Structure formats: structure tokens, C-alpha cells
Image 1: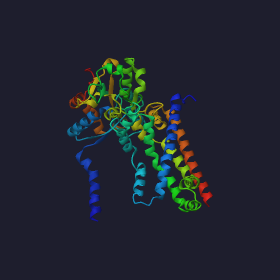
Image 2: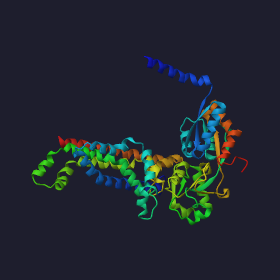
Image 3: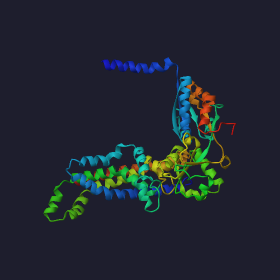
Image 4: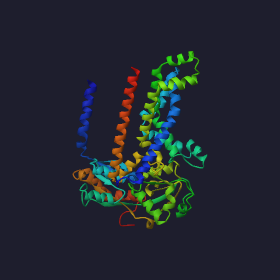
Length: 251
Length: 228
């Protein structure tokens, strides 16, 4: 009996607590490359507003498909600008809410020092495997392919490519040593100087404009619109820059 | 049919090849293992049986994670690969075979073990009194008597390998013709919003799965009738 009573009180508290704190919750779909920055932003957001942003990480293409099928996200932080644009066109996102929260940087990376030293590494191709993420579903993969094509090395390197479903997996293939080198996001290498890297020059690929958008299902959600607002603000921008992204209008 | 492409036929061929090689390997390894499991009386028998059955319960991500490390340059897989100048067994057809053998093992071993157990000691005792060698008796008595179990194991092992996804996604690297199997191709098409291709392949998988289950049921019915 005692157990049932405390259980009932516990369940009651679950329903009362959020209302009492006046805090709301929102589900945010986050492109995998933005994982670490998003976690830090969500923590700062919570501290400032009391709202909670529940983050899900994945490939932008995967999220786009899920959102068109009614996935319960209120905010989408994509790794590109075309999918958020399409969601606005599809009537699934709030027009006017779309903006570029970060511009991503592509890096060629190896876990070992001295392996990567510029485009010569790609030309010499003295590695067995080069990991990228799926170019059809993940913008960093598409950017990697563009860069290799711009260097006229794509044909030569293609047999050595291995694909991860997300940029996280492309990173993991290098991290576990299964691929010697890989194209990853600069944000993934923040906080560590280990290995060797080459930040791919911007003129070799189209800027990875990462757009955020408020989804229709989040239009009435305080936490969702507050999160979009917070992303525009100075605290979030400082975190975004810290992770190696360029902010819109200052490249 | 304009949806059909070289990419798709490549994925189909690769998937069938992977399933065939995996099934053949599993029959070679699994049959003696099932035989031993069916006849051993040691206390450790069920421990071995439980280890074999682990993939039934473990999420593919657990196997995928371990295999990614074990097949890699710092694990035993890397040492094996270095025999022919490779660095890692991940991203190779051989690596997928190793993964699939582990992953589909219980689906092959379990039905064969059951068939050997159901057969009992009697037929082999009779064979022994007729002075058949154990080896001879195994091939002429045990295997034919357990054929429905062997068939069930082969069909299930094949089908389960065709249906494998998470493990291949984690250790495959999505290389067309080498590690991009059907399930991964479907995932890719869905992610890239190419739903025509996705639905063609997904529909094909449904028909294949249905055919497998129907076949299994018919094998069961036939062997039940043969027994009675």
C-alpha cells in the first residue's frame, strides 16, 4: 500500500513539475557534425531560459525524410540549406524562420601525425582507405566529393572511398584506424591537436551553409521558438565559433 | 523497368553472394558444433550453446562495435589482412562474411542441434552393432535423418544474412559491389529521398521473406508427415 501511495505521488509529481516550473521542452533534430556544439548550446539554453532542448543526432537526409513523415521534432538544425528550404516549400516549416546558423569547414584528417600535409596527401594517395560520409544524405560528404573533383582526383580516389552513414561514422572509421585518412568536419576535431589535418580551402567546395528552421509542429511551442531565438544570440554564436564554424556574413 | 539500375543488380548479386558464402561456411562449422552440442553431456555444453545464441539477444551495434575494433589494424583482423598486404578486414567482403557468420550462427546451429537431439542415440547404436565406423555412421545415418534440420538451418541462415543491416552498416563502409548490400542500399535510397528505388527493393524483400517463411512451414509439415 505504502508503495502504491508513493508511486501515485511520484506520478502526480511528473505531471505537476513542468507546469510549476513554467519550463517547456522541445525536440531538436541536429545534423551529426553539430553534435558537440549543440550539446553545449542546449546546456547554456537551459541555464538561461529553463527550457529544455532534447537533442537527436543524425544525417540531415535522414531527418528530412523523417520530418516529411511526421517525426516529432519542432526544430531542425540541418547541415545544409537545401533541406530546410524544401521543408518550407513543403509547408512543413515556418516561413521566415530559416537562417544560417553556421558555415561548416571540411577537414582532411588522420589519427597519425605527419600523414596529412595538404592536397599532396590526396595526390600521393599512399593510403588504403579514405573515409567520407554518404554524399547523397550528408552535406559534408557532398562537399568532400566536390573538393576531390575540383582537384581532379575523384576518379583516382574513388576505389579507396569508404562511406559512413553520418559524419560521425566517417570520423569513427578514422578513429578506429580502419581508414588512415578521412574527410570530417572541423568541429569534430575541436579541443584536440592529435594527428594531422588539412583544412580544405574554401574555393574547392561550395560553402556548407547550415540552416536552422522552426518546424510547423513547433510553431506554438515556447521552447522551440526560444531555442531558435537563442541560436541567433551572442552566447550561442560564441559557442558556434569556438567549434570552428564561420558565422554567416563574416567569412 | 527504368527504376532498375546497375547499382541495384550489383547490390542484389552481392547480397546473394554474401548469404551463400555465409550459409556454406556456417554449415561446415555449424554442423559439427551442433553435433557436439546435441551429444555432449558436460556441464559446459550449455555455456557454449549460450555463447552461440548470444547474437539472438545482442543488438547488432554491439557486434558492429566489437568487430570494427577486432577487424581493424590494431586487432586480429588487421594481422590477418596484413598477410595479403591489407590493413583491415573492415570494408571487405571477407569482413562481412566473418560478421555474418557470427551473426547468423544461432539460426543455423539451433535447428541442426534440435534435429540431432530428436534422432536420439538409437540409430547410431544400431549402426555400431552393424560395425559401421562412427564417421561412416555420421554421414550415412545421422546426416540423412537430420536433413530437415539441416535444410531449415540453411534456409534460416541464408535469409537472416540477407536481412542483416546494422552490422553491415557499421563495418561495411557502403562500397558498391563489395559491401553495399540490399538492406544498406534501401537505407541509402530512403535517406536520399529516392523512394521509387526504395519501394522496389523493399517490396522485393517482403516477397523474399514471405517465400522463406512459407518454405520453412512446408519443410516442417513434410518432415512431420514423414515422421508419422
